[in-house]
Length: 464
Image (cartoon, rainbow, N blue to C red; front, top):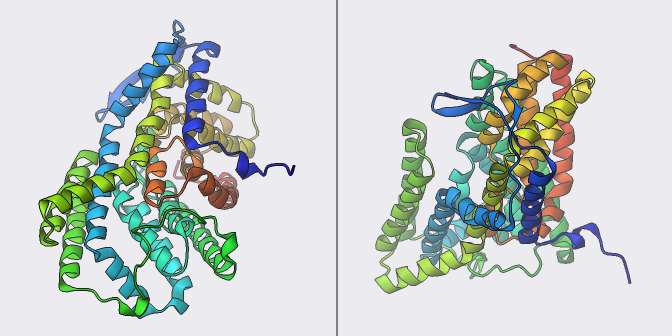
C-alpha cells in the first residue's frame, strides 16, 4: 500500500474543530486559571498590563464542554444570520438568471483569451473589498466569483482563490484594518493608521503573489483537467447553462443589478457613517432579497422555495460559524485565555530582538486558532505585548505589525475562523481541498511578511 499524502490525512473541519474544543477544555486542567484586570475605554474592555493573577481553577466538566456549544451559537448568531440572509439573496439573483447573464455577457465581450487578465482584476477587486470594506461584509460577493471562474474555464478552487483568499489577505494585511491596526494604535496611543505606507506595500505584494498564484493554477488546470482540485465538486446553479455567444443582459437583469448594487452601497454608507454592523447588514440583505423577488415577478411559492433551497446550500457554512465560536466559549469558561497570553509573553522574554519579533508573530498565529477575532485578540494581548516589545527593543509599530501578520495571514487556513468556513461554503469548497490549494501560498506570504517585519526592526520603525 502506498503511504497517504499529507492532504489525505486532513480530517473534516468538524473533526478538527472538535479536537481544538477538547484541547481547549483539557487546558483548563493543565494550565492554572488566571485573569488580568480590565478597564473600559471607549466602551470596550482593555487589559491592564502587569495585572495578571492566578485565580481558583475551573476545570470544565463533560457537561460544561457541551454547554459551550449553544453558548457559541448564541454568541455567533449575528454572523450566522448574515450567512443565511446572503445565501437567500444570492439564490434569488441566481433564480432570476441575473448573475449568470451578467457574467456570461462580460466574458463574451472581453473574450476567453483575456482570462488571465480577468483573474488578475478579480483578485485585486476582492482584495480591495477586503482592505476597504471588511470581512463578513463581503460574504454576499463571493458567489459571483464562483460563476465567473467556471465561465472562464476555471474551477471552484480558483473561485475561492480569487474571492475568499483575496478578501482574507486584503482584510488581514489592510493598512487601515480597524479591528487589528486601529485597535492596536488606540491601545498604543499612536496616530491612527500611522505606518500605512509599509503596510500598504506588504498588502500589495501579498495580493500580487495571490493573483499570479491564481493565474498559474488556471493555466495548469487548463492544460490538464486531471490536476484540478475542484474535480467532482457540485457546480449546479453556478456553471453557465448555455453557449457563451448566446448571453444577453435584459432590462430586468439591469434593474435587479441596480437593486443589488444600490443595497450594497446603502449598506456601506451605513457601515462607514453610522457604524452599522452584522444585524444591519443582514437586514439590508433581506430587503434586497425581497425587492429582487418582487421585481423579478416571482410568485410567493417560487420565492419561498428558492429561499429555503438557498438556506439548505449555505446551512453547513452557517453551522460552522457557531461551531467554531464554541472554542472561545470553552476558553472563557475555563478561565485560561489570559493565562495563555501571559505564558506567551513570558516565553518571548530574553529572545534576541529579531527573533522576538518573528516569535511574537508566530505566537499570535497560534493564539489565532483559539481567539479568531482580530479585535478580541488585540484587546487581550496587545496591552501585554506592547510594553514587552519595548523591553525587547521593538517599537510599538513593529509590535502591532507582528500581531497583524500573525493574525491576518493565518486566517487563510484557520478552521476556527467562522467567516472563512462560511465563505468557502459559498464556493462549495471542502476545507481539506482548500488547505491543499492555499497552504503553499500562505507559507510564501508569511515568509515575505516576516522579511518586512525584520526590516521594520532594522529601521527602528516609528513613530514610536
